[in-house]
Image (cartoon, rainbow, N blue to C red):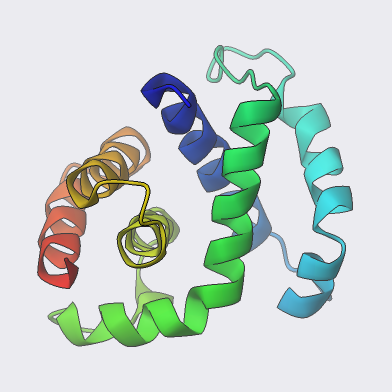
Length: 151
C-alpha cells in the first residue's frame, strides 16, 4: 500500500475515533466492535460529503481496510496501550488529555507496538502529523516525546 493511502487511512481512523469519542454512546466498546461495520457505514456517509474543511475526505477499499484495522486495534488494545503510555506522561492520564492528543497517542502507540509492517519512525511521524493538523501548537511535541520514549 502506498504511503499516501496509509496517511489517508490514519486520518479516516482518527476522525472516526474522534467522532466516537465525542458521542455520548450508550453502547459499550464491545458492542461497537461487534457492530463495527455498521458504525463505519454510518460514518462513511458523512465522511465523503464535501465541505470547506474536509475537501480530501475520499477513500477506497485499501484505505478503508487499513483504517478499519487501526480502529479495531486501538479499540481492542486501548487498555494495553494506556498501560504503556501513562508511565511516560509527566502528569495525568490518557483520559485527562485533550481528545486530539489522546487519539494521536493511541493510534501512534498502536502502530509502534502492534504493527510490525510499519516502521517505528513512520508511525511516530504520522502521529505527530495528526497532532499538528488537529491539535494545538504544542501537541506535536508531546506526541513526539511520548512515542519516542515508548519506542
